[in-house]
Image (cartoon, rainbow, N blue to C red; front, top):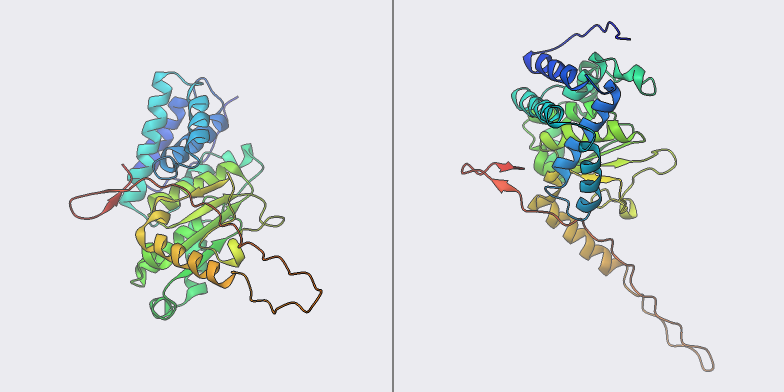
Length: 296
């Protein structure tokens, strides 16, 4: 039975997204269409840059796509186009989170309710104050972590706060997100990727298995198949930061000098250096004639 849902929409892009979404739901459950759309969109972005996870994710994509006919797949593609255009026209919004709540999907799935974006903006401004640019100049770069990211509204708000304070978050901020829910984690990944935020989203329990990175450094997360790297994570400035950190770690964790053994004592064996986790294999990002990086 159809339900009456109060839909408070921000702009024409959101209205068009809702209209196309309704068309795609004629034969399928609303939650199924939303979940499949989100995962397929996330895979479309991830597979342009992260080749180490591309094969398995491509299989997932094809499996989901096989449930829909040509017209329904066209609707899903148009939904993604509206998300891209909506965020491009107004980056200062939680597009997917607001669509999730407007469609009343939170009640369909685990009773989830996302923090309103205006509240997230207030939290970002209160947390980092007015001297963000000075802090960046002093430290070089910082990381920001949301261990229960949802659709990523708090991280999106922080990215926009950086812009207001003349901070280039693409080179100065590493965005780390984690959520136990696969679908909302992918929603966060889509929005961070489209905003050009360097970082990654970890799908997992942040209480039992918090993402702290190798040796507590967020530059390189503990390897796993449920890590989604944004395209800007592969930007040259972050690549060299990871490279220099890895070299420094190898030097600091090398074998320690041992004193010569006394007569009759066994010679201690030298411990091999710790094996380094492999980095995801990126694909080169495209570039416009004006020098702007692009995914497609």
